[in-house]
Length: 431
Image 1: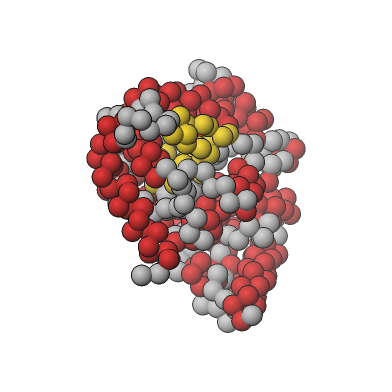
Image 2: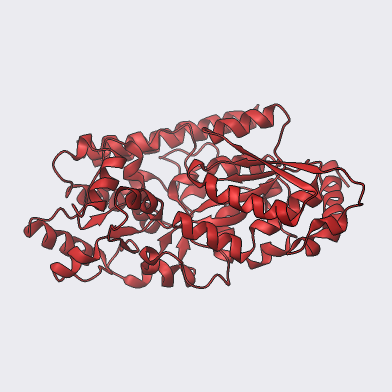
């Protein structure tokens, strides 16, 4: 048995005896009375969720008086976690966004395999697959458990829709027809915010994720891929998504180029547009601008066949455990505590997120009722950009594309950037 397998087996032996106990009872029953209090280092990456995690930690500590959970909230989590790892200070328990950065860390085997956790069997399979497909240790482990999901849908104002007798679009043509109706009646169809480059991304991930062929990233992320030799590529497969993106942004309001994300939240909250091309993650900020804001949602219709519509969703909060934690029993108990339905519902209600459990029931936030069915049916795909290497300035490229409207230049640059990334990968493997 190699070293890695030995570590995994040791961890499973240590945690196995106490996991069942940890599901709702005090872990004190597993520890000798004379044992000192255990201190868990809890890396928490979401600054907007400090209050929710503080409340959960307090509840856990009250049930487990032999454990202290020290919350380590950081302003720049991607940099902070890498710094901690370099110093050999992997936290006992972590929350991280389930993106490409998490996948890189998972693939480097710094997190424990959580596949044997009782809560792992309750996670919606489609959601776990989205997370695992980004990258795991040895390509076979489960290094993170989805705690909360977001939904990249189109937000809309139901009062404006009702006033102009516009039905919820279920196809691409209906979406464009709705935009034209609003425009003809002097209503901004969308509120665009091109000052912040990333705000183009939520729309593009839906268009590209649904319209580009399966196997796209497996091909273009392969070592030595080139636009000329690859089966897929942006110029070959990306024109429809790019043209539809340009068409939607053609409806932008005057001054969109200098409007930022906070401007967009405030404007939509004030009823200044019928639709808003941001997902569930924008809802708390919209309500902060106007607690009475009228918000509803529907999945992006990217084609004229509603049966082909899928929902782009990401694991907004992933729970992970340090592979070499000195307190595996206590860390496992804390994770199982967080993965209870009650804890997840409390968090997702406060953060306008979705519980990613197979038995989660209805989405708590009424603004997300429009994506309830498609999420429940498992018609889900992950974020397109989570497959984009961090060395590629993709959001800036999208922003430039929306400013100059040059489809060919955008597709050519995307191909060129992926070719450079593939060349670097090829060089490393050959060294």
